[in-house]
Length: 498
Image (cartoon, rainbow, N blue to C red):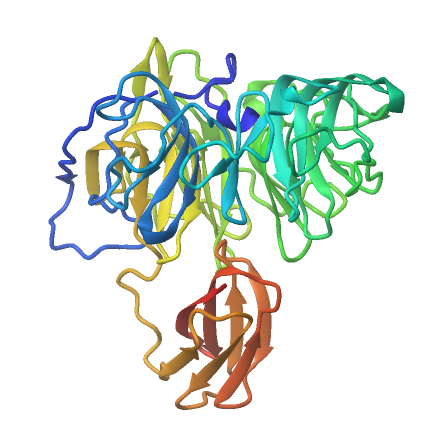
């Protein structure tokens, strides 16, 4: 799938792996310095030497699924799917295999993983789920160029790319860019599959069920489209959305829809006719127009001959309105940023974190790799980053042995609530759908804010009593419950909804 292949734009491939090395962090400052938010946790190290990790998924007990293309320590040959222990070593109880390479998506007690061309469903032990066929084994479908995929709650899959269909009875014969599958892996013959004159790569569902899309086409279902367009839940083009970016160059690698309906997009875009006009991070309004109030940062990738085009591949919105971005770049506005940066709410580059050189480069078969593909929050408030890199320097710790996956400390490291913080109790934890927030003392102008694991606000309300009932019906996962008064945040509690 395309998610695995962003690092190398020519071959659409990112990286591979080697022997386990002892993690020996070289401290760039005194050990006694306090840990800061987003600083490197040097107790975690994978020993993976090459080539890349394209997707990760945190599991219970600190374990971590990884997908990509890599050589695992103490094993020969390439692998595309494995599981790591909480310290980064390989979990030998998991069936490391060639079943993956692309994006990981959890579903009930299993997970989906993209390959170069299709999607598989895998059990937690690492073996293929026999109730979901190899898509090419079903009638009417032959895979060609992989793209992205989306999993619906019932396990159905919508897959992009360019693929050949031969369902002549229903009139679907030829090349199609959006194809629906049942939750058993067969072509869904109840759906209308969609075409374009190019290849549809990334797409992401918005809160209203629509999908933001990007690719190399200029028409979709015979309608002119820009390199970013939006479709209805059934695949029809949403004609109310029209992005005013260059129609003939670039594409998005990630979308994030904000609470106010505006859209952050990362990738490589242009408004002019040369690489000097490349935009890597943009904000669009709900109808697709570029937001002129969002700062247009200048990105560069200077670490290899030919000055490759920089791009952003992941955006993590934070609870306070800032963003962490990752991708292939080493300078932003001529400031050093190695594949990761903290961005303000209006697009400005911030100095609060990632002040070091970031991820380091390595040479694999004549190509220089130096990028961070994503940042993923985990239950304890910390983060994992992953990609194709050797070494990581956060400005305090320079760990030259970091490889492909690293762990960063969370926002609450070394932080204290305001001096007027009141004692907060949140129970039961974990909960089914309802929990109780108890305040020993009730502050003036108190507000309750609930955020999901990505920092998105899912609930806000005034607190008028010492006891407040939180209802999270139909939700699941890890949530952060914040209490604010007129002077700012006074307490934060973590809540698990099962």
